[in-house]
Image (cartoon, rainbow over all chains, first blue to last red):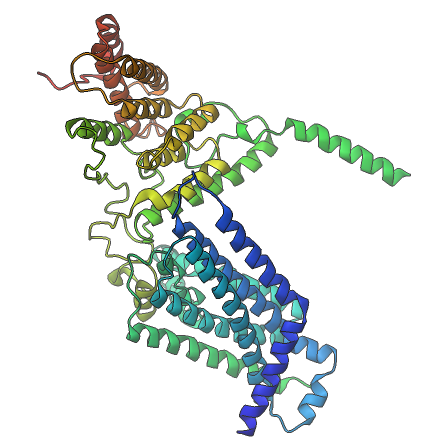
Length: 261
Length: 314
């Protein structure tokens, strides 16, 4: 119970700091501005073209939430070390795992805060345009996005413990923005690879978390065609994201424990 | 002082260089038709900017393909035309004929065009071809996916229109974007299709398929019966349409390779272009006859004989 309370306190600190700092607001404002701009675009005076808005708005929501998560997660630990604020924190009876969990929970809470704001704007926009939200697929998309943010946040913590803050930021952005490319490329390359190359591609597919697997936006755009995912698939995706997040958390914890204060 | 001098010199040089840049003269890009590459590139900088623009239009082209298939990503054939741009002749002329038969009621069954990517593999491969095992299975659940051996899903082309608008804004020489956008727009109310095709013609005055498309749009406006005397308004529309078909035929004949076949020797000439050219010639002859101008009809028959028999033997 004490551990849970400690995690909640640390998470709250991260969330408050994220809200207090102006960059999250800037991200939210820019995204909202772009979503609003998309709504105003008039194509041939034809009304009811909602798929374009849906596609752009979902893509913006997902991307800007990921940007907020990467910026927050990658600098949590480096800043604690630079400003030496980690010493008074760890001087209390808080384990390093608890500390890490609190930080990750805080980053995920901030991601939820951003995504919640974006969702409200998206729903208002799509309603104003006369389109349907497609609730089942939309909520599944949001759920999978939160799992993706958890995975991304833990990966950022590992990267920030492995290399400098700037390098961690760059690698995290690369990891996120090439996720879709990576999944498509492995399939194409596999046909042309030799036995060693194929083994390498197989290993990469299972060793590197597939962020693209947690992106349901393509189906959420075409809501009139695709039914919601089954419970079995949702459970498998949740298990996939949690398993990789736990593995990354274990790596981050091992690195953090070995790090001299 | 030297720094100020350098700044001024830099600004002057930038001014001079920028006047030399005309991105509209870049003629590369995968999505071009032959006529769009007729003019040569004029500057390296224009080529670089043009490459970016045509890349954007290519990406948007793929986006329309996916929208058309309900989000399912098929491995794209670079030679395939955009949906609505292929065999424009067959699509629109047949539709016009269909409307004639049904008295322009506008409620005819929507034609299901030949899908350019029919038989193509999906980007997310089927299970037996996917080395990723259960991860591949999850991909097939999460991403819009359909067994490639099954007939393709085809959605209403209306939702594609914003992408055609962006496509032609990013690359005004993307003729297929105008053709396909015009095809889907003519199913909507208003004059947007005509305005869009005319914008395409302003940007691509040598694109024969755009003249053909405009001719078909003009004919669609007419409410004249299939035979019998023509009212003045219909006569004017038919005359204007015939001019478009004649212009399309002349331009198409000038751009067509000698045998008109789609092969390695003429990579820029596709079967759908050949079909459109033949249809333009047919329409020019038929309209001349409808207008009672038998001399022009005969002249056209002789001029277009190079294409082979345009009409089935009676």
